[in-house]
Image (cartoon, rainbow, N blue to C red; front, side):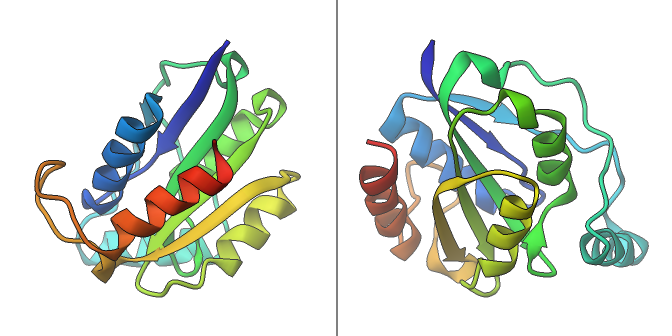
Length: 163
């Protein structure tokens, strides 16, 4: 059994940078969730807001890794209207019986991830750890230039929660 699987959804790429850093630190496998819904443009913005408010699901592409094969799952999600992204919500619902240990990293315009935490716990998961980060807490276009408060906080969270 492998130790850690990182599961994430990233519409803009900000979450992806955090995932790449975490994967470096943990030597983890990475599962990117591919959402089949169109979220771009003005219509996409309103669909995102509605789907987040009603905590709706979406359609995902087939995933590569089976979470049953991992001791720990670390999920990264952007915050949409103070909730997890529909792709992450759908993945968690689809794999609820396969996840042994779950931790959550949420990235948004506000560091308050309590809405996302309550939502995931409401789905029946007992979270090992939760980290809320600000979009503005990181800089860089790729893993080689990635820096900022989010990197420091992520490193501390990993040492505290996943070691």
